[in-house]
Length: 150
Image (tube, rainbow, N blue to C red; front, side, top):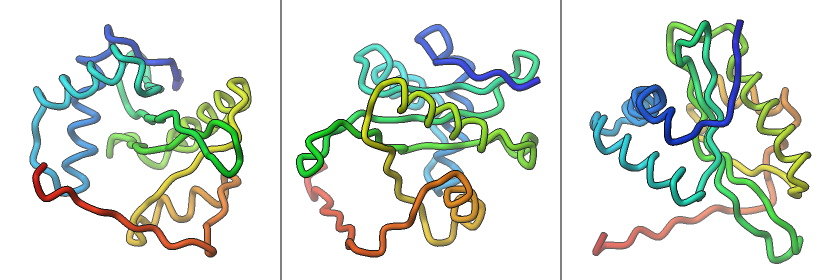
């Protein structure tokens, strides 16, 4: 049975391999130690909310949300930045369960909504998000400036 809980610092060693695999999926070099440090900093500083899915205590997926604010809505939002299910657990609706958990968290936290961005090539995500009530924004262009000194 799949269980979903809010991750804490004590979950870093279970969570980091999933986070590292997520980054590798997006063509980044594996860096387990860096993944642990990154997640620990986010959780220790209360900069993100991570929900960890487990199956019989085995970590199988996670979703990471970042709090932000919308000036035009004058309301808090959540940025769904990361959603990952380990390959051996895909097809078992764990991604859907993690999204539902995030939506319930948003309702109980009284935020306006959840925003996300995904690659056009993410076929699974682009089918899942509309099923879960997310609507694709056709009215805006998204831009990114990369700091050349970073």
